[in-house]
Length: 324
Ligand SMILES: Cc1cc2nc3c(=O)[nH]c(=O)nc-3n(C[C@H](O)[C@H](O)[C@H](O)COP(=O)(O)OP(=O)(O)OC[C@H]3O[C@@H](n4cnc5c(N)ncnc54)[C@H](O)[C@@H]3O)c2cc1C
Image (cartoon, rainbow, N blue to C red; front, side):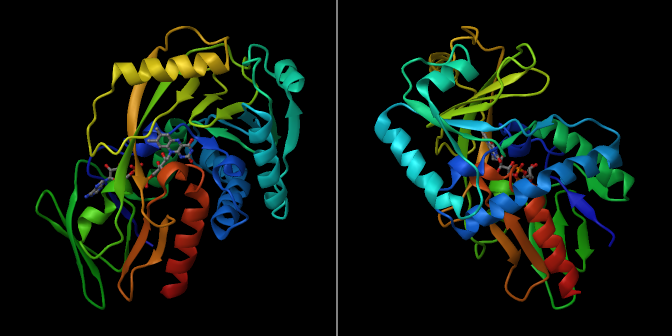
């Protein structure tokens, strides 16, 4: 197929630039649901996805199957995570119970008041910025045309084709198209399933590589160390429309929470940024053909779009090819 990507601003410059890149389905999904199966499928695809992109682009991608630990503040919380781990075990998710002493041994400097946690050894992290940079080169080398600073302003179709009117006034015609505009997707048609921005702040610290062995997560507070040592801490959630302000107080509050969790962190973060998660009312994401049209939907990934990327791509490309 001949493929054109039409990007309103800058390639991979929105949520897929901002995201923490945790690949942690075990602590993201409560039940052994189809959504969790899909997330696990995506996690399984990740090593090959990264290898393919590395080979196709010649660029390195900061990806590690380093395991993640979900932390419990009390015995009740620990028991609740254990119950969930039992429900998830039917999907072959491995989870190992850790005591307070285990935690302190594995992560020196961790909050000594925590009751314990569960280690998910199969999980990990990817730096979405390195992933998106490699994806761009891989696309370009395989002949994908990328148009930046070119918003799609309207979509129309007939039985034979999809027509995208773009900001520069042109109308692009294609046999089919995928709407993957993150939180902005539903702006392209009142009829489309709604998505809305859920703003989140993250902060970052340049640290020694290997100083934090696993992703750490305690409710809305988490720490993710890249292989480079750069360590990301999050987060918060705001229904704040498209307000791009990075709020210093929010960054300080996240820094304080993160430092309570892991005392090895410096007092102050070096960076702070925001992004807009593509929120949905129902269980997202929306994946598949829109009615009988040549339009396909791939949006509404909310907090897990980095994790769900390879499975999303596989599902959409398989369905589109089968429809031709
Ligand atoms: C703070 C934060 C932390 C996160 N942490 C994680 C995490 O740990 N793990 C995880 O898996 N996920 C995480 N996510 C979620 C993840 O980043 C998103 O789900 C994912 O990046 C969404 O990808 P997307 O391509 O749908 O949207 P985006 O990356 O936002 O891309 C949509 C693109 O569409 C473009 N666009 C918009 N309107 C138009 C238009 N009219 N015409 C053309 N182009 C248009 C935009 O400019 C943008 O580049 C996090 C997100 C945030 C904000």
